[in-house]
Amino acid sequence: MKKQPTRLSKPRKIPQNKEHKLSDFVLSAGNIVGIEDDKYIRTRTGYIGILKVPGIDIVNFKKLDREIAQGAFGRALQSCGLAHKLVFVDYSPDYSSQIRFLRQRLRLVTHQYRRHLLERQIEWITHHQDNQSDRLSFIMLFAKTKEEIDDGANIYINAFLNAKVAITVCDSSDFNPFLISLLQGATNCRTLSS
Image (cartoon, rainbow, N blue to C red):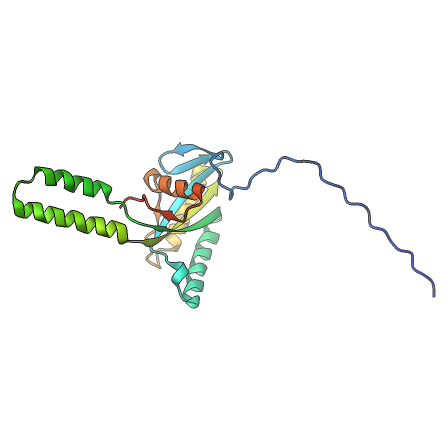
């Protein structure tokens, strides 16, 4: 029996140090350039549009319900055709402006019964603000142009019309607290206003 010669593989080339480009999915404060038209985040590589889906508590769904919800998200995201990122957070309402208004009215009221009603209303709103918590989902859409984001957002929102889910396009008042919590690694958006 003849001995087969052993083949030696060619040595692999060691790649030279290249500049690593961060993916669009890696969001850092250095990538954000600014906010345009009050609903787009300008980055170095393009734009980010953010959609808000309230009341999605996918973490506490049963297995079948979770699969159905994830399937609906997947179909909608595939139909819009943009790079995307889903972020699920807890949020609590911020009624500070309402409480501030009621306290201002309280200072002006002299009638004792009206004063009592305003104090009770302030206590109720404060209690609700401190104890209310809900799930919220943000969908970040990445694109090169604003028009691509608008088209993708419309396709995404229309894909959920049959499910009767209230998806809205975020403006700066919605996504500023979200971005702060995302960049800090927090899981709650406590400062979202109602």
